[in-house]
Length: 153
Image (cartoon, rainbow, N blue to C red):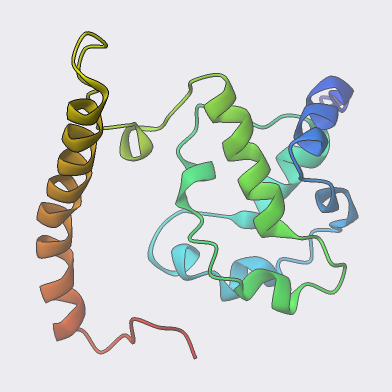
C-alpha cells in the first residue's frame, strides 16, 4: 500500500485563492448524491475535495470545470466544507497558470493592439455575442422538450 503525503505548498495555494473549507471534509459522500453532474456522468465533488485536501489536485483535469455551482452540495454538507468556494479556488489556480480544459478554453480572439481601442472593444463584444448564440440554439430546444426543470426549486 502506498502512503500519500499531503502537498502542503499546493494546499496553501488553494487556500490563498479562497478555498479553505475543503479540509473539513470527512468523505461522507452527501455532496455526490445531490450533484446534478454525478447523475449524468462520472463527476465526483467528493473526489475533488479529497484531492484538494491532500494537495493532489490535477488542474489540467476537466473535472474542476464541470461543477455548475448550483449550491446543492453545501446545503447537505454536515461539515460546512464550502465545496463551491473550493471549486472556484481550483479554477482560479488553473487560470492563473493558463490551464484550461477543452470546454473552458477561451474562444475569443483579440484584435491586434494596433487597432483603435473602440474597434477592439466592439469586436470583443461581437465575438461574445455571436459565440454563445450557436451554443444556446443547440441546447435550449432540448431543454424545453425535456421534463427536467431548468431552474432548481
